[in-house]
Image (tube, rainbow, N blue to C red; front, side):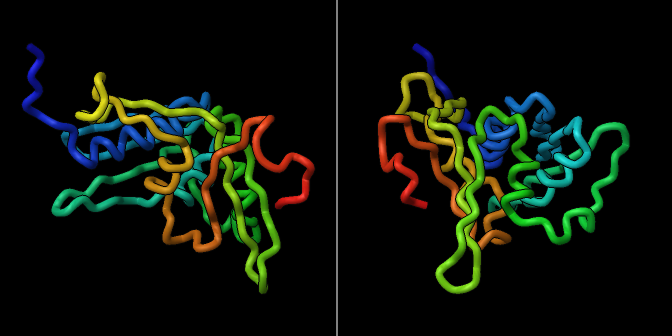
Length: 179
């Protein structure tokens, strides 16, 4: 009989979600240090590192536990946010997710009044990672990239950004009427 007496903490699951979203990107290496409660993303591309640092929070609180999220650019590259002044959220998301197999595209749509709306679209694929899910035979959490993005990205900074999943070729409106 396989009995588990210890469950994954919420911050461990959050780290697994960050890894699911960025871990398959060939330019990103994700490491989680449970002892220090820290996730580090080592990014080979300094511009991508800047963009990722802009869309991820520096820390996430889980009651009395604080998970630190650190983006480390390669070759002692520096993160200079002034390089991103004037860039749209579409450009920033495109840079952050460039060559990431989880990402499809970002669509910028003129808003009803003056604010633009951004749809960050992820691949139509189920994502699985271990999370001590008692509802799953293997303990996995099965979800979509859009749900992970809603959970881990710095949502407070993006009031007009929505995360969604790309359609299959045979589903939905495909004649270009919307959006």
